[in-house]
Length: 489
Image 1 (cartoon, one colour):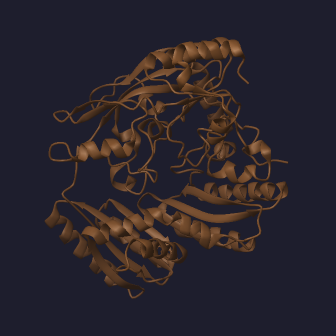
Image 2: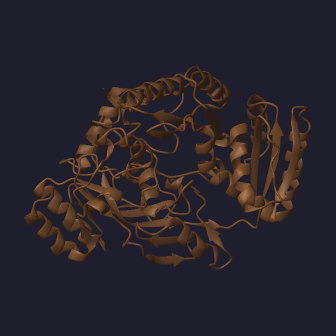
Image 3: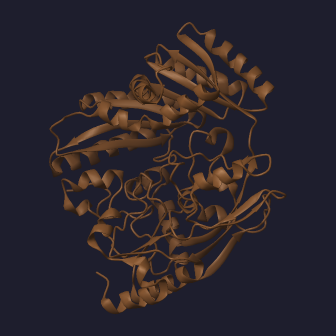
């Protein structure tokens, strides 16, 4: 609880209208996809802040950080709250810094192709403006939460999605940023140019640091010319193994915008979504499907598409291969992105659970190990009698392993922790990463030493202590094993 005298100081900085310690509003900020399900079983997973504040500008943020250092308050930066890792949860209470008021697009420069924005700007809103500016532009990071996520959240998590194979991640578009460190120092990292080797690359260190080093107050982002044409080649396969092999053949020929693999259950989920969207499209229910998205100049894109179609058609285990354009292309990707709720229903293990938690793991492994990961995941989940599904951004080795786990008691939470650790060990044994794009946050933090070793993680903690000596910024995330992350007894 914030002491009344401290609350008065916050009110003086932010304004009474833009702060709240109302229990209902605090509850709305207290959970993510994982903790909400866990909290029905164990109240410890209802992770409540002490107060919510909504600053308007960088000066207010600076004053709040200074106050936090004086009064030993914890600061939790928050964008739209869409991440899967619990990055925005106030694990030690404190002050949630909601950036929804800092949502100004300050400048768009179509000569040098950059935009200057505040952290609360929605990626979708910036995208609409860029699309309608000049000949049309975009920032093609395309995270799964693209419709609702903020630029600040994307920078904090180095967000990306299925287009990362061709277009990279958020860090590839951040030219420079302004931030306030945990020690109260105002800094500007990066330059107005794409290419520089002057000094250590602290900008890249900052992007993806999950709000643990400093608070971004302004960012300058590069944007690109928007492609003229988009289309999708879709094909269905007798097995996941064949789909993975074919995707590799395609990669050797061209770098597409996306290569997505979905399994039979995901196809069913997509069909469920499509049935609500249009009666004209129904996908063949096969063991696996590939969605290969191309972009570029229209004639060249069409030629590449025909070549890729021939690659798929030459395989005896492939069928129903089509090139989708226009509205069909758009609907397929809406179905791919919107299949989540249908998947949760399809993987639901029991109608009698007190709660149900969606387990969404986002490992990445070397391409040669993708099928092994998927196969062994299936064996492990089957041994636990769990319904599961597999999908992935095959282009960059990023695999999503999804299930839903029944929770009836705290013992089920502990079992879930054991299962997650077993799967993390599997991914790291194959030379993979514990998280390809969702981030460490709370839930993956205990496994970081499995990937890098304890010595390297300790070095990360020492770097944080330089930027944030009092550990006021987003404590219990990434480098820290916090009280909840390991689902311990």
